Amino acid sequence: MIQLYNVSKKYPNEVQALNDITLHIKKGEFVFLVGPSGAGKSTLTKLICREELPSRGQAIVNGRSLLRMKNREVPYLRRKMGMVYQDFRLIPNKTVFENVAFAMEITGASRKEIKQAVPAVLRMVGMETKINMLPAQLSGGEQQRTAVARAIVNNPVLILADEPTGNLDPDTSWELMKLFMNINRRGTTILMSTHAWDIVDDMKKRVIKLENGVIVRDEESGVYGHDH
Amino acid sequence: MVLLSGTKKVGFTVMIINTIIYYFREAATSLIRNAWLTVASMGTIIISLLILGSSVLLVLNVRQIASDLESSLEITVFMEDGLEQERLDELREEIKFVPGVIVVNFITKEQALENLKESFGDKADLLAGLEDDNPLPNSYTVKTREAKLVPEAARQLEKLEGVEQVRYGQGVVEKLLALTHWVRIWGSLSLLVLGVAAVLLIATTIRMSVFARRREIGIMKMLGATNIFVRMPFMLEGMIIGLTGGLVAVLIINFGYLSLLNKVMLALPFIQLVDDPVSIYRVLGGLLGAGLVIGTLGSTISLRRFLRV
Image (cartoon, rainbow over all chains, first blue to last red; front, side, top):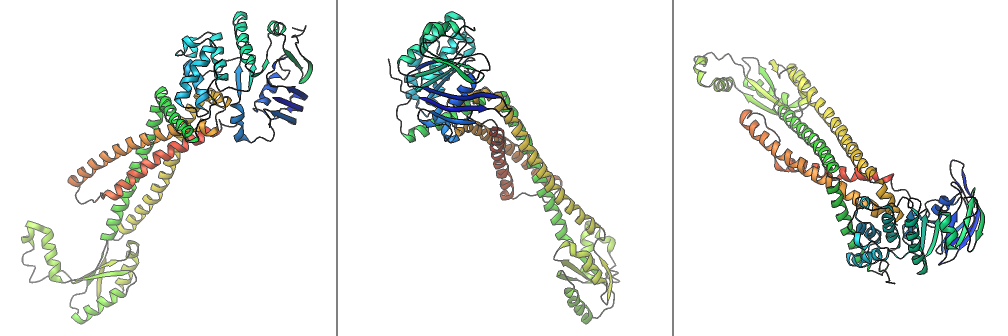
């Protein structure tokens, strides 16, 4: 699903965000990306959704080389990914239904398809009773569940989650993690960067630890580490 | 687990139609949701186009009045008294030979007196008795190809044998020519400035509207929206604002100008304003087009920098 070979990223302001990263993530894996702030987690996520290009190395996502990909092909790559962020990124003047439907409208889906698929995903994330509410009327957990619904409505092969529980309390975080596990069980690859050490320790998934732009640890059934 | 149908294969045409419906729905929703900005942008377009339209009409009318005045300019060449008919005929040919002269009319002493009586109207009896000892000279009235040729032609005419005096409203022609020249140059220049100002004003207004929704644009890009998909609703929004603003401006100018025409026709019948429908509709159509172009141009300029991947 994701293959990185000797990838480095240097920003124009001379910050070396990633240094010689080689990494393989197979289809259907659930991977935690951990490490202190500024370690390069966000840069790695941005490379994979091609918001940034590597300065050096080769990157292949879903069988396509990101370096050879043309700008106009990027939207079609992103439709195969679902993105979930710490700050939810819902459109404030659209309802729950409209926010999720929007991801489908972008692909040119018909009203009929949207009316079928959106309630189904909203039921899956447990938001079926709040479909006509605006994001401001929802709790953080509900907003994030809406964002997850939006991320999966187009059946992505990969979900990139950037500290999805960063703004949620522990109970809500666990609810959300269960949701991600369900999605992962259906075969969707998940790459999640997080600071939630208790969740990482408990879930016994693959853990990749970044520090100063370098992978310092990559373990199956790993833990967050002792330095939290 | 229910299989989600988001990636179900759909026909290409159906996709395009869905997307077009989406563009219009999105543009309409945005116009209504951002009603205040919509009104502001439309107001800007209406005011700009009103100024633009009135300036165009002003320039057209000044040009028409100026060219009316110019074409009514003629030179009167007074003859010495007591010239033979033969010499008068020769003079006609000599006058025709002067560069720029196109029309020559002979006016006899008797005709001149008649014309004078006519202009006196019911007080014509003041002139009674002049028939016997007519003090008015024979004259030729001369027209030139262009008004600016009048002064030089007049100088040539003065030199002819048997010419007593040449009259053409000396000074007035020069002043009029300078005025029409001035109006043409400054009219075109101010139209250019106003046009650019209108585009910039609308670009700024739409930039504000795009800026207010930059998070939304970021989310759209994150979800895999193509550039055209992000751009189109804003473009449509700009076009709708431009066209509607243009339409309002056109209606105001149409009714305003028609009532002005009526008033001028009653109060100042000797001034001939531009009143042929073709010219007026050309101006109004141009304004509508300008509204559309300004709206589209404004949104295009504003969107460009928000859409880099």
